[in-house]
Image (cartoon, rainbow, N blue to C red; front, side, top):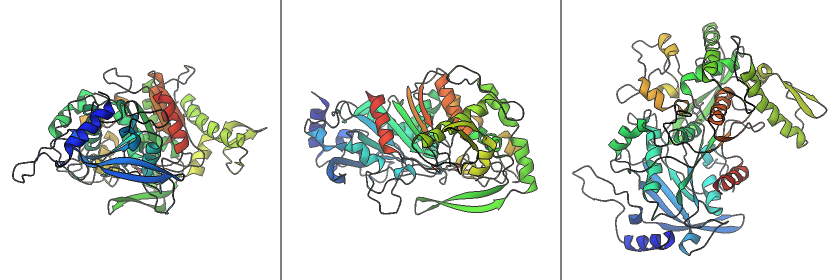
Length: 500
Ligand code: DHB
C-alpha cells in the first residue's frame, strides 16, 4: 500500500476521534503522537491567480508530556493533490520534501506558522502592510512541498530558557519521522528554515542531528523515539555562536562609536523592534577595546580554510586572511549589483575599476553599515539583553554566559549559565565532531545591511561547514537588512535542486 492510500485510510478511521488521548483533567494528560488520529480542515488560498488546495492539520501537540501546549505544537499542511494520487511539480505523496519553517524571533516563544499572504516579515510572517505576497509556507505548498511548521518555547517563560527551543524543534522533527509511513511527504527530506534567532536554531537543528546531548530533555518531554536529523538547512541572518559573538561584534565595530540600538520587546506575542540612537560611553569604548583582541585567538583556534585550502587567520590587530575572506563576500555581492547595471557608487568603501570591484575597505564598510549594539553586544554586563534572558534558568530569569561578562558584571549576585547549556546552544560544538548526523546542504543568507551580529559569525559558520565536507551556499544579498524569506524564488530553486 502506498502512502496516499495509507493516509486516506487513517484519515477515515480518525473521523469522530478527539485529537487528544484523554479528556480527563485530574491526571496529567498524555498526548498521542499518532498522526492518523489528527483531524484536518480543507483549505484553499490563491497564488498567482491559481487556487492552492491543501489539508490543514493544526495545533498538533508533538510530545507526549508537553510543558506548554501553546508552543509545543506543530501545524502540518499537505497539498490536496496528494490525496488523489496526484503530483505537484514532480513531487508525490511519497517523495515530497517536508518544508520545516520556524517563526522564532528574538529567542522569544513562537507559535507554529500558517500558509498565508502578506509574507516578507521576519520569518515569513505577515508584514502588516496588507500585501498579497504568498509567505514561505504557502509558496512551499504551491510547489508541492508538505509543510510542517513547529512552535517552540522561548526565553520569556521560566520553562523556555536555553535549551528549550532547540529541544522543542528536535521533538517536532521527530513527529513526522515517527509518522513517516502514514504521513504524506518524505520525512527523510526535512528542510528547516528560520530567520535570526530562528535562523540560528535552524542551523543548530542541522548541526546536532541525533546528538546524545539533548536526549535527557527529549525523554522528559516524551518526544517520539525517532531520528532527529534533518535533510537540509536554510538559515537567514543566524544569531549564533553566542558565546563568541561579543568579541566578533567588536572585531567588526570597534571604533564605530555612534549607534542605533534595537530594542526587542514582545507585544501580544508579536516581536516588536525599535531603534534608539546613542553614542558609546568611555567605559563602553574601553570594553570594546578589550573584547576586540579576543577574537583573533578564537578564529585562529578553529583552523579554518577558504575554498582553495588557504588558512583563514587574524593577527593581533584583527587583520589577515579571515578578514579578507569576510570582505570577499561583500565584494561578490557588490559585483552582482554592478553586473546587473546597478549604481553602487554611494558605497565609498568599495573600489571599482572598469566595472569590477577591486577592493573592499572592511573598516569603512562597518562604519557605513553602523553599529547597532553596545558592548558587550550579547552578554550584557547589566544582564539587559535577550540572550541574558535566554541563558537564565527555571529560577533565575537572566544570567551571563561568557567568562568576560561574568567577570565584568555590574549586577550584584549575577550568575553564569552552566557550561553544558551554553554548549548545546552552539552549532560550532558539533560540526566536524563526527558524533552527529549533519545535512549535506546548507543555504545561509545575511544582508549587507545587517548589524545584528558580526558578518564574521556567518562567514565562520560557512567556512567551518565547508571545511567539514558540507556544501554551503553562502551569500550576502546587497542592501538587505536583518530579515528573511525575501528571496523565495531563489530559496525554492535551491530546495528543489538539493532535493533531487
Ligand atoms: C534577534 C535579533 C537579535 O539582535 C538578537 O540578538 C537575537 C535575536 C532576532 O531578530 O531574532
